[in-house]
Image 1 (cartoon, rainbow, N blue to C red):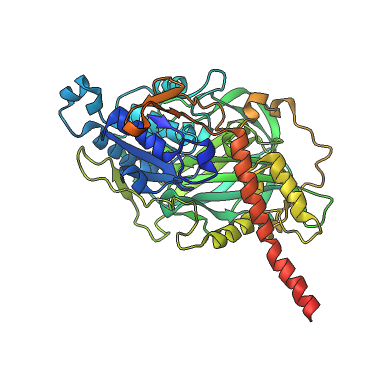
Image 2 (image 1 turned 45 degrees about the horizontal axis):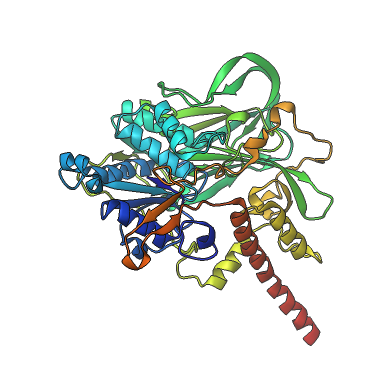
Amino acid sequence: MVTSGPSSVWPKKAYRNPTDQLVKFLDYKHGDKWAIFEFRAEGTGYPDSEVYYRIHHFPWPDHHPPPFALISNLMASMRNWLQGGEDQNEAKIDKRKQRVAVVHCKAGKGRSGTVACSYLISQDGWKMADALKRFTERRMRAGFGEGVSIPSQLRYICYVDQWTNRFNKLYVERAVEIVEILVWGLQDGVKVSVEGYIEDGREIKSFHTFTREEKAVEKAKLLPVFSPKAIPSSEPDSQIASSDVSSTNVSIVQFKPVSQLLLPSSDVNIDFERRNTAAYTGWTVVTSLAHVWFNAYFEGGHTGADSGVFEIDWDAMDGIKGSARKGIRALDRLKVVWRYTTECGRSRKKIIPEPASGEPVPEPAAADWKGRSHPDETYEEEAEAQAIRFDGVNCGHPGAITLTAGAIMATGAASLSKELGLRKSSPTSANISRATSFTSEKPLESDRTKESEWTSEDEGVNPLGPEGEEQITIDCDKEESNREIECRQDTKVGKSFEVSIEKIANAVSKMKPRREAEETKKTK
């Protein structure tokens, strides 16, 4: 059973499934035969006690694939729960004795779909295409596209298929060194960063941003143009990008780190951001955003080789917040050259088999359910920390707070730092070239995104109940007989309202130090 993330706090409780009502529904339909598996690195929004501590945490960030080291234990934990307990023949007769796994992330789409399809493939023997199709049919409204649509999440489902059918459910985690990155057709002003997972996958860390000194441009060469496949193939050694018969002349840009660039795991993310100069001092305009995740073990590292190459083209990369939006084309093709390393304070190999049936399964630590970065922080300290992370709030100009608040209300963005548009320059981008102007740049026809693809990755999720009902009537409390529980789903209005209020509060909180400074001057 897949659901959107419930909540016990306001304002989320107003437009999401209230946790207490979800629990009543589960108790009524399944008795004590249900358990929750959640994947929210941003926090569940409710304490474990409200679901009788019947919950398993495997968190990772929204709109990204899971750290593959989580897969073995996650699949085993779900399998142990669903296949354990009473005699299975008796359970088949009485549905109330059948165990149910309740899966949720935020909207019950990308992360939940990745896990649901992975379970069908690895535990129930489904073909990958069939699992993806089934999830789309059961979870999405007609006309809103695929259930799992983020390219990197699709790639990792392909990895699960290989892990199941080729590698006997054995995964080997090793630290990775990025040797060099080659980019064809790179535009001016593009920032290239290398990221990876830390804190057992709960956080993404930027390990390196390339500078001008680490960039070299080669002469134009005649190279094949790569075209993405709609769904990654489960055939051995397949890639999302496959060669096409056409070719073109493009320049090659080489990014080579001046010192060792090491990541603690085999999961690698290459992030691209294009900035143009703006008319305002200290500001830039972001015109392109894209990134791509891959795992070195499945990109050649399983063959016994200590190095490998990952290739992909622009159209096959991930867009902004799980959508197809990437802005103006920033490059044509990417090649990452990597090799295993024995550094990063880790052993040469960490062999991760799937736990046997009934064997205890270790779980990573849960994220703070209130969404705080550090559980010991007060609400005010967390608000201040969040405000510092938001670009474009306090630029030192009169009216900056008001302008930023207006932008927040207009876009409803979770963070201006992950959207296209005006942004305050940061120290990390000081040594990165910028394009001179963006006013004359227009997206090519191939870069134009269909209107349906500009919506959030969370849009189009079916708000109906597990049996297709619009309202679920329960009679589990004599005093609340025939009470109706609406199956709520996040709405654009609700999400925009929440984000707007939160960010405006953060923006206002940043005004306090400035007022204090002005009062101090007056006193002097």
